[in-house]
Length: 333
Image (tube, rainbow, N blue to C red):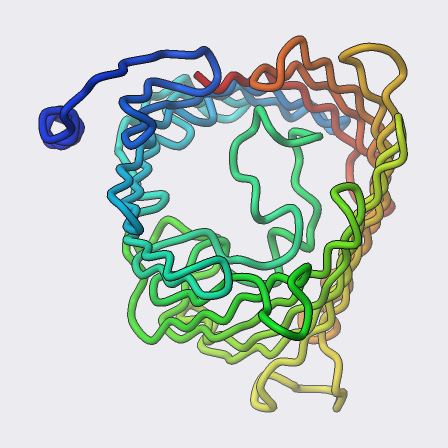
């Protein structure tokens, strides 16, 4: 922790500050070149089978320094730093994880490159890892079970020149063990992927992506392809993602198929009145190789008094498991 504090104070000391400003939700900034902020969230879960848990899910600090076309970004997080459930006593875990750390250089709007550990640039939901900015406390299965949340390697991205300046592209590659390897939903040391996203206007976009990664725990390679879209019309928001995946042949035991996993979610959000949103989501997941199956409806409410504060509640109705209730309070400083 002392190292973290020292690094951020070092950043501040090397910037010749003429303008120091703090805005709630947007952090501390110096000359619009240095930024320091953080976030946290409190969460409660109850299931119909009697299980419950409380936790402080995030305690994070993040910051970046801009210098001409360079950007240095870092984010550290203590995840589940306090946890109590029906089966465990309350316990603290203040171990800091490296959520993100990378160096980025912007040649122009058409060509940018970053290297280090970054959020895997795929889909819609995976791009947002801060609870205060999410619509629901829970994450849809497409953002949990289809590819690693984080990648360590190179990401080349920007807007396509000549062909379409409204189309954003990403090509990324990982050929090494992850920075903070254990802190990821899928542990991989070999990951390559791409994404194209077409903006029709500020309220509409759609795209597709794909990739291949090696799971070091399961010792299998997965190839996947996905599609996603977003639409906002006044008070109404509609978004969705769908994925198909094929695993290596040696994982197949009792069948032969080109598609091993398939999943989608479709979410509708309606602003009922100022700062209050009703959420309805349907999601589906099927894993033929492991006989995994999930079908769930989520009904939720999100109260956002400010863009950086969120009080959420939701009820999830599962087809083959206990239903559950989730609520959380999250803030971005």
